[in-house]
Length: 200
Image (cartoon, rainbow, N blue to C red; front, side, top):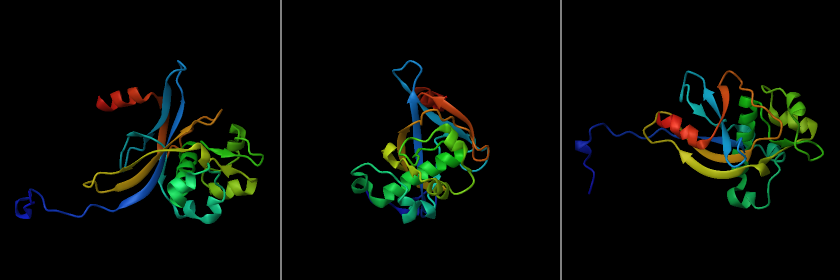
């Protein structure tokens, strides 16, 4: 069947261009030891997705793609073949946004050990994460991220994102602290409960 433009209910328009972004689903074991929970936070009460509970993440920045910052990424064998440099850029953006929004950092110290909560507290969430890691000899734990899915917003939305979703285990001992600007009320929730709350 061919479309009939003269009979459309609304005028056709080009969809808004997508902006590249990245998000991370941080997981931890549930209290029963058999299930798991995912970390979600409440968005600010203005802008897109106002007051919605979301996963940490945000738009890609030029610094995420800089070769000098890619050099800070520890990757698993085969990761570059699977997604190329773009996948590393997306993973770095997700790590950076998670740090800026929630103070959670997936990284290794100069000895190659996972960083401690005390080490994370040394950092300034408003300064360049990459510069601070470089000064300390730290690497970013891209190897701890696992690609889950890629979603693009519906064509009729005025603001659209093209987003890879990664999953990672919550770093040992770290506690999410919302920036109280973009994100509020970090909440651990089972996927089943999250879906039920959305339905309600």
